[in-house]
Amino acid sequence: MKKTLKIIWDSKQRNLIIYLSLITLFGIYLYFERPGIKSKKNLIEITGTLNHIDRVLVYYGKIIKSARDSTLYFHLQEYPCKFQVSYFPYDKDKVFKTTKFGDKITFYINKEDIEKLSIRNKRIRSFSLKVNNQTYVTVDNGLSGFGKGYFDLALIIISIVINVIVIWNVTKRKNKKRPTKAIRHTAVY
Image: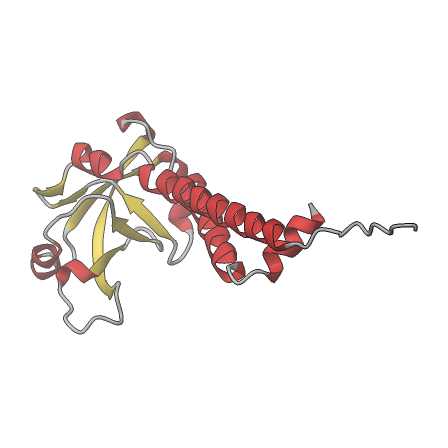
């Protein structure tokens, strides 16, 4: 094992192997941090009065910025946390322009996030969005946009497969280059 690790560390592909290992760890982190929501039974309704909405740009390096490049954080007067509607596209621009202070906002959040409601600036994901009587994201759409974690699993599996192939090629090449010990034959006359 030590020989193999030394071969990998001394190879030109060392940085690629480290990078792929970090991607694998990140995928595992994402997979286990994903909320454990199977159905509507895992959600609870939260209603409050809008204090304000923060529009935060997601991609800083882009030249052209649009509503798709932003995330909306809803701050309610009743809770110190912030709410983010996730996993399903909706008309963020319309919500941002038409929603005003004092509007009644209804979210469906994960039951596991109830204890996070009292933490200042803690982000809580919502699977729906209703402003007064206007529904922008239904619970069914929010749950369907949530997905099953396929992205996380694909990230893990693909990075592991590529990493195994690269390591196998590195060790295979190194073993071929290794000189074999020559046996001396001395002839006695």
